[in-house]
Image (tube, rainbow, N blue to C red):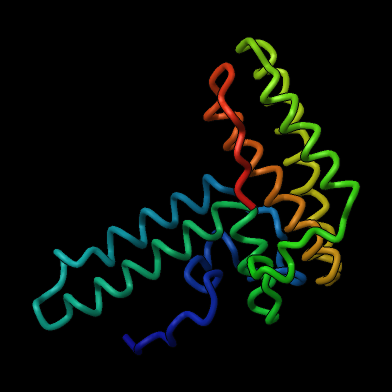
Length: 184
């Protein structure tokens, strides 16, 4: 069989679950169970132990790229950051980390205080539920922005989502009286 051209983007690794490729042509939302199934099939074929010594290092490199592509696409936040990076837009530099959205900053600080003041697992469960709602809304807004080719809107929403994902981590690590440190 003819050598296939090497994958150009993470989407190219998954032609079955992501046939349309990245947005705006393809959807931002991904069927994660289909993606996982295709990932496992790819990994079983690329496993270095299945290859001869001369092909082993190539198989290891491919296996590593498949892993990276899967981990990136599986997470809506990493997927959004990756898609923006394909357009030369960074969401992790200090420049964009300075939130221009003061309303968001106030909301995040308020949530942080509520986490710190929480005294029971019930309060935290309620905060978790609220935050999962924020994350879900943020992912929907991201999808609309990417599918509408609104990269600036997608960049702003990726910054928002990063805050809510960090709040999710803080909620996961909550202990009564423990200081809440949010990573940005």
